[in-house]
Amino acid sequence: MRQKLGIVGAGAVGTAAAHWAAAKGIAQEIVLVDIVPGLAKGKALDIAQSAPVYGFSTRLAGTEDWAALEGAGVVIITAGRPRKPGMSRDDLLQVNLEIVKSCVEKIVKYAPEACLIVVTNPIDAMVYTAFRVSGFPRERVIGMAGVLDSARYRYFLAEALGVSPKDVQALVMGIHGDHMLPLVRLANVAGIPVKDLLPAEKLAEIVDRTRKGGAEIVSYLKTGSAFTTPGLAAVEMAESIMRDQKRVLTCSVWLTGEFGFKDVFIGVPVVLGAGGVERILEFPLTEDEKEALSLSVEAVRRQIEKTGL
Image 1 (cartoon, rainbow, N blue to C red):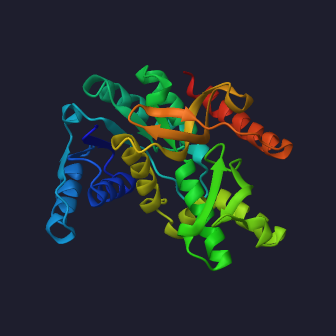
Image 2 (image 1 turned 30 degrees about the vertical axis):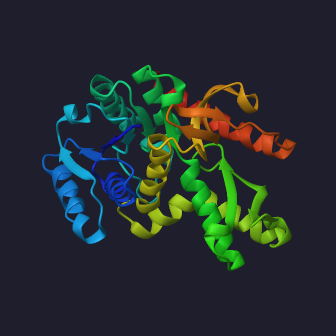
């Protein structure tokens, strides 16, 4: 079992991930790394001091020393610039590209057996960067997107239906961006299709809000972007790997022909276990869904070209 979790970047998302990971007790040890002197140490100490109150026993450490990642079974990469109002995820590509490259080079040195979970935006391009720079097999380089997007989709559906979000199952595939594909056909509440419970106009409104879910939060925060749910989404993935849970989660992974696409990172449902991505769950799409997913793939390919890798 993978008992040590590394988190690179002690900003809002990295701190939220460390907080959730400690509260859920998914690792014996959590190491938070950041290049800003004292930042990771202070964040880790703050979380660690909640242990007596909450009742967890996980050891937490914060540092600027990359060697502290040695032995980590999973490393979550959150380092990078967040979005500001008026910015798209694509606007972050060049600045975050260099940050992710630098981080991955150091992770490879100290944690060469780790699974990488990339959260930095634009996620599909940044996970491609991590894949190329690390040289790791595709099973161990994964982008966090679909878990977050699906959570937003499920929440909006539950809100519209007046039901518990726990009882809503829904799937968002594709790019983490405007061309993401919230699947209405498969969304259900305790097995009941949502298209039988909500009018088409309301469903279209929810799909649009899901696609703009991150931008909506950015518009309110002004100086930052979403962090609580992104942090938890990454931890949900890490937990499935570290505990070999075989959870079915939508993640950005390198396709080699699945769903008719190859040589591209895109969000699809996968089984996450001790080996990372253990299986991609491929299923038939309608013609409209195929067309929508194609738009996602084209958008990701444009991002990938800009990386120059």
